[in-house]
Length: 596
Image 1 (cartoon, rainbow, N blue to C red):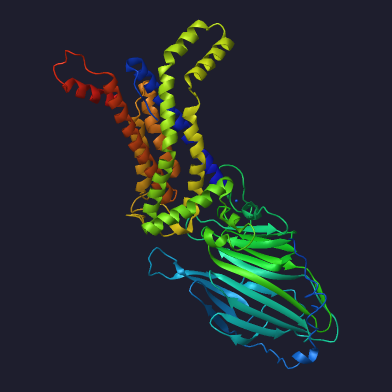
Image 2: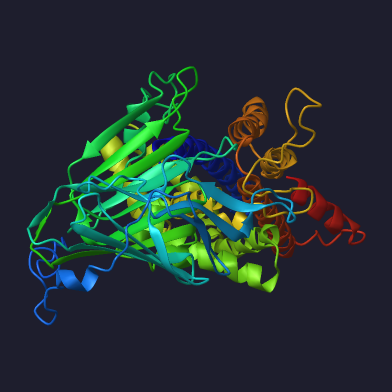
């Protein structure tokens, strides 16, 4: 997670900790009262050097290519641009004969708008095409190439440089699951050695979408390392933004339209990404350095609107007839965990699941499993929420039992307090001795809250960035990855119903949790916490509000069940007096107890 997400989560967790603590205190007070009155119950994530056999010397099994073998390569005149399409079910590419580059890409399985009849998601790389090759001797970045072979899923481009001492070949092969392989070959076809200096390949660019929740980033894994570098903060700083404080990721105004930074580290792989999609690159030789570029508007907030990158490769010396070959693997597609994690070492870190990545990796398959049963992600979120609640039910039940025991021994605790009021150390020793004798853990009420924190962090991260939720509808919600934004333009503030439901269920849970404390304090907490959560979460994706509302409803159901169970046990342990004229008093007593 980036710092903005972490800050939001910390604020939410702090509020939830306060809320849970308050609820726990109220539950214990209720348990204490019942114990005194009727002894009843209460509840609760190599370095590779440039191969000499392909760069400095020819591979042993393959003798150097003679210059006569390529003497028949025709001149490549500067001709009009020819564009070629490579197409399969998951990815469509438009290639240009000027530079032999990728000019645009399309993902036919993903729509650009919630309407399923809308155009598919497309990336137009404009003046920063993918795999534009620069700094090759006497070869322009947009040099004209000949298309020598072309099928539906492959294309071969060939050209020579101006001095006719290099034969340049680029072969594209489109594969399944949004993948593409590219082989670049430079062959010295002269009688003299040719020096290929440090050469650079463009990785294209990614543009920020219209959603305020969209975010851009560049990730890189240095050769020989295991921890991925997330360069979002670098991108913000490049345009003059601040990366600290509550308004991180651009609280200040941008001071530069465009700025670049070169990182002098070899890269095993590089990824440019938006909120839901990624462009991933890996090469047979690691890059010698990585240059990242961030763009924004000077008069706007310092949030990158477009990011781009290029990777530089070490120089090489080619003797006559020798060949320089470099293979690249590309992925242009969704940030779907099941595919992303297969791309290379530690590529699952592109998802930025954070500290609780291990739990996020469990939640995503479970969410997709529920979707396979009932193909609606709103229903899948509700089922996932109830599953989590069911898994934690034994823990919360045990906490309720502990709270009941704590309430039952309160008279003994008071006796110790009165007896050792002048000896705090002795009082502490005797109190803990009493807890051990009665097999009571005073910290048990905090355990469910602490154990559920990983769940909250993981669900917050997954539900905010899961591509599965992009344009996923649920009832009146058109897109679970965004706020509802009902009646935009008609009212000063768009209407989001789910956050209101969330706040209402929080207030209802507080109301159903009896308090024997200060009524004014109880009333203030009952309204203050839901109001604060409503304010913080109002602009969050609908999936988060749906999850929290479903979780609160589950908590209310559990609370109601425990209240009924406590009432029945109390009635069984406290039968009506013998002279009771009928059983109506028992029923009335049960109702009174249920309201307490």
